[in-house]
Length: 542
Image 1: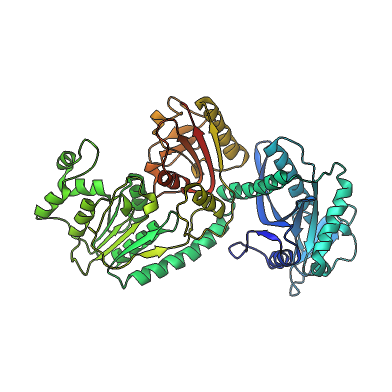
Image 2 (image 1 turned 90 degrees about the horizontal axis):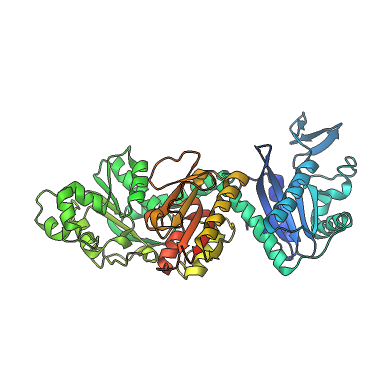
């Protein structure tokens, strides 16, 4: 059985012919083969973005790769320079294709050869070629000199598909006279390169259809949790990063608001609070950080008195116990509860309208307890916690790497999108790290067509204390630290702490390790913000 990327295509917007060919490749090819499905790619020609898609890329370590275009329908023919396809037996008219399927496959072939050489800085010396597959019918003759029969896989070939693929490799082997076998390192590099292309394609928005389908499934799962929780007035919900805690909490808050209940959504992180508020602002929901909640109840002057020199809010419980006019809520959602201490949790309970009948849902993840706080038993919830077990944010490549790096989140099932393993590089001097960051931004935005709004630069330091201090711009982009809509020439910069609970398609993490290295929980929080692509730059000296 071939190594398939992805392992299944149910979340993809596939055609029936692609599905049949995918299953045939999976079942008929041996495990020496690696098969990639639906790889979108971009090139810039005279400043204009050209995009295309490779239906299948078949890789063999002793040969190289083939790009394969798949066409279905009932029949295909070539009339002059036109390619015409009959989509089904019920159609009377042939549909004219925009481009030759052989030309499509050939363009993808050259793209990956050039991409490989650009990525690694040396000539690609394996076999490279293309083919066209027609899994629903037989082709008995050439379509012409540019589309010969020996580059066609048809219905008759599916039962002996491995031999047919070897035949096509050998055809191109005779054409590629510079052919040499891949080294094991080159094999790994090639597979990583293709996965990287897929990850960057996703970050550029090319996999929006897939993500939409995933979100539909996620919505159903989350709705099931919400329906289940309705039978429990008060509950803990534990979930590692990316398991959907915040979204379940948001949905539950909206559900209760729609029932005309008084609802409080509470978290610790200011940026997360702003994000949640942007989602629920049309509903009658009080959305606060614990700090902003205290200000709204006690006023800013009283809050300042309670905010000690070590920047820890204390003494609130004593005031709440004596307060005669505390707001009362039918439903309280606490997100990021691992960032709450025992006193704060006690205060939250005092805001419940009915200590037994009012809803209280507490979401937390001990893996993200970077402030080393403990709420103890102060939430006073007796039931065992519900546990979320599936990561729905990060690609499998990212999450598996994070688990290996931090040894946290080991019990969580990864996403179904494999993606690419993150890249990490260490620099002794800041000037080299800055140069690498500039190179990354140029590559991502100008070459890979990733939107600047899909990228966030994270750091364990504020921008004033980081390698970017005094940098007005980098790669013609300015860094923005406030939470607002970005302009086309801006890149978001956040601290790891400030971005906790949020996510981005692409994360570039600057880890200044010369003085206070991040512990595993801080690294876990930072790494798991990335959906599709993660790059870690470690700096030894500023």
